[in-house]
Image (cartoon, rainbow, N blue to C red; front, side):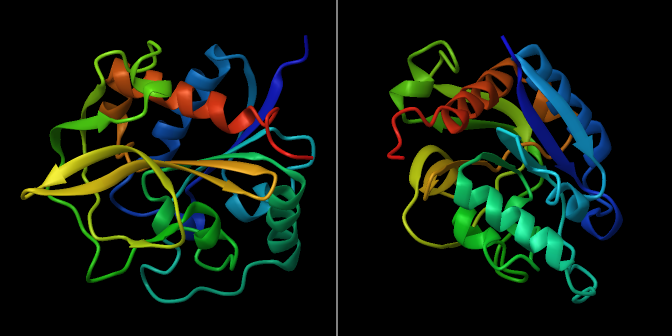
Amino acid sequence: MNRLQAVIASGSGRYRDPWHPFARTSALLSGLLAAGGFTVTIEDDLDQAMTRLDGVSLLVVNAGDPWRSGPPGPVPAEALAGFRHAVQRGIGILAMHTAPATMRGYPEWAPTIGAIWLPGISGHPPAAEITVTIDDPRFSDSGLASSGSVEVFDERYCHLQQLGPSEVVGTHTVDGTTHPAVWLRRVGRSRVAVDLLGHDERSYESETHRALILGLVRWVVDRATEAP
């Protein structure tokens, strides 16, 4: 049986930042996906990765904010077209942690994942041991996160700008307010899962977080029930 192809677009160049060890967390994601049956390629040039999605079943985006120091140069046209084509023909997308702040030069990115990080409004408390409640039985009752929660050392993102309807399957609480932490979307023939966890290596030490990631990946690459 042929293994499904996965590409991890990892933060480097204008998509890196001082806070997130993208090279190390992308390597951990790669190992997890390989153990889950994928053939994995890590692409350190995110824009180039978008031109190499033909035949790819899963795109993982693990990258930072390219506008943290002001708007950069334009995104190459072939990268914009590559991402657009992949979404149109149907691909599974797993958007990790900083995803609402990355790929700002791609007009379809934020509407695809359903959220934007707003500088000066969005934020998070210091990273700590946290609990993310998994509210969906597909993930909480099937051994993927059998405790009904993910226990993890991570950040809790708050006050993102939500775009369009999303199916929230995981939440966390900050100062008594509940915020979405994990959600699902269908965009045409593509399926999208957003996991706001994954700040650094400690996040991937969590057995329940690793199990959740594999559950999300299985969901996004299973389009058998989608209309042609």
